[in-house]
Length: 428
Image 1 (spheres, rainbow, N blue to C red):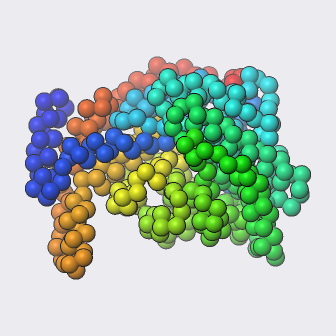
Image 2: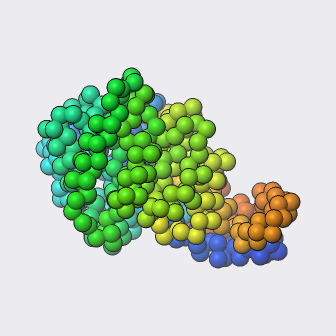
């Protein structure tokens, strides 16, 4: 579509929205303030770079598929992320796991990692105008082989993982200091039992004590924000998860931490969109891991479905945008991995745009007047308004491809770059 046609379509849409009291220009300005934190692990199937040719194992995490072109080194992964970001309008962030360190070919165990092992990522983020978020890696390690880490009954193993958590907070803080934007450092552990346990209390007591040790040192929230993430179950932890939603909700409220809601970490009948307003009543902030579960926590690529739209709408309606952090969390190795980033990120931004184009004040007034008929009519009418024309205009204004033009760019990248990567692993 030509630039003139994009502008003409946008002007018609702008007039249509103005009839409902919606300022599309204001909506686009607001949209530009929403950074999405892309997840590094989509690019290499959650392998990381601790050892050459590292592969994922354990922790209830599984990437499926073997699409060619997987990133095998830090340099390749960064190049793929840059390719994805060129297809996405706006300024965004990158979410790193601790297993993506640069160790110079010398193995560094997780209780000994330091900010210097991530200096390359910090420098790269500066060059690309990105903020960074961070995650301790409590899986794919011999000391997590039996399914327990911070809640382990063995004090020595528990101490190892406590030191890992302490180290990761220091790394997150250094990222925040150098980049001038607070890092959200998120704690998720896979601890749990495959079968029904006898003692549900003791592991949770150990987890509380371990978390309190990790968070003992006060860190300036302007450089690092702590978050804790719950899960319903995982592979090998089907019957009991130590860090349940109830556990972490209580912990976050009592300790003043951000609570992480992952779209795949609840029962299939539960929706995180319905939890956002309640959590924000009591927690200082909220981290969202936007994913798409299919029958279980399968981490499919995010599509523009009803739940994604509901999440975005609740974010916007909350009026607490400065307390909400949005990250993506899925890993699909069955399709082009770079395209998977682009699809999910563009859909998240589209959902936010649709929410921002809602005349929320008018709808709230109708609700207070108990005029539920007009409320329903207006909500349904909004679904057929020309929001895609506003989206195309936003992409064009931000220098991102319009429509499906981005796919041609990624196909060219696959032909020129991904297809030339050797199948065999190389040294990171």
